[in-house]
Length: 341
DNA sequence: GCAGATGATTCGCA
DNA sequence: TGCGAATCATCTGC
Image (cartoon, rainbow, N blue to C red):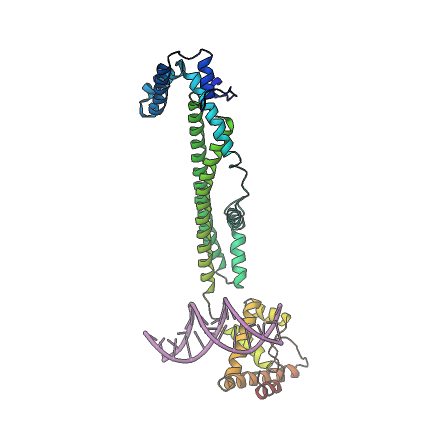
């Protein structure tokens, strides 16, 4: 390709509006007949304007004819001058933009969820975090986690495929435009900066498409996550044994039904539930007992009786265990019943 | 299907 | 941060 025409250089001042052309004409490189010159320039411009309407072969032939045209250098100089003026007016318009905060947020979120960046077990950390947030340890967790992981991995795969597609399309389009500009630089002045600017415009367009992709990926992850959390909300009643253990502790500590952290941990272990479930249970129990002592009286009596039997048998064996499930005394029940929460 | 029971969540307070 | 209170959502027995 001919590199020479692409160079933009300064020109003398002469004819108003087209000083380069004037100088060019004055130094004898152009024709002498004024009307003929106008006609020549009119022709050459017309050919440039219509070159894209022609077939490839026709266009190639025309391009060749244009490149060899005797008026081409003069026209090229004029275009160079017009261009310089235009460039001055647009200079500074393409300064480096700061990174888009929304894009940064999306990137961070995709990274945190394990969708973007290196694969970290397909978002198992996120699944674990979601599970931890609900305080559940259910036995069926692994199945739900694997389901969550599978779906997240699917989202990740789609995201990366689409991203790759966009990047490929962007590169192809950029190359195409650059080739076009190089080709056009044979007939009109195009500076490297201008090409750079055009590439920048293309990249910005494609990055806005990428942002949409990132946004919809984030939405998909959010929906998946909320569905996962909703699934965790499904409650299961504790088994009878667990309820017995919790009730025994509650009624044997009626004067102060607030288990310590250690006691909660021990109860959690015995009942095969989490500490937070123990806390929930005691919270619910206290409030419901307080609201309707009469209704719970029978239950309280039953556990009090059981407490008495246990205490007797324990004392008979000469040892007074102090485990959370070991009831204190029936006095507690009386005290609590008389002094409700 | 309905009412009551029950585990979980949320919010305000100390 | 733990608790009480209100509320939600689901389970369970009828």
